[in-house]
Length: 166
Image (cartoon, helix red, strand yellow):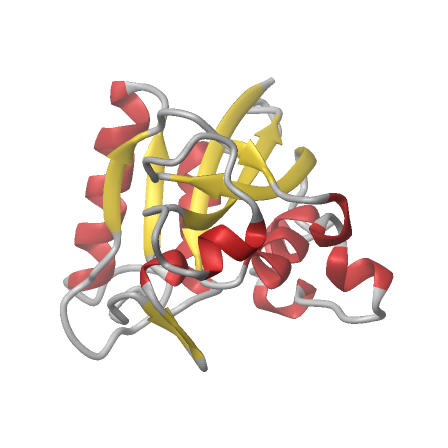
C-alpha cells in the first residue's frame, strides 16, 4: 500500500471522491502544510496555522496508479484558483499536492504541466496555482469530519472519471 496527500478546498468532497476510486483502500481528512503542531479545525479555519485541508489517500498501486490519482485530483477541483475553491476562501483551501517521494514530485509537476498546457483531465482558466510541496506531517481531522458526505447523504462520486470509479 502507498500513500498520497492532496489538498483541493474543503476536504469533505475531496475525501468522498477519492473513496470512490478503484484501488483506494482508505481516505482520511486532515491538515498538512502548516507550522502548528496538532491543529484543530477552528485553528486551521482561522488561517493562522498555515495548514491546508488535506486528504490522506491509501491505495494499492497495482490497482490504481499515482498518475490516475493525480488526474482525479485535477478533475475534482479548479487548480487555477489561488487559496480558494468555490465559496471557501483562504490559504487553508489552497490546491496542493504533498509528495512523499521524488517520483511523486515529478509526476505531480508533469501532470500539473499537462493541465496548464490544456492536455490534462480538465480545462483551466489561467495558470495552475497548485502548490507541490514535500509532505511533512499530516494531522487527522476531528472525527466528525471523517466520512462527512457519507454521514450526511451527499456524494461526489460523479466527479471521478468513470473508468476509475468503484
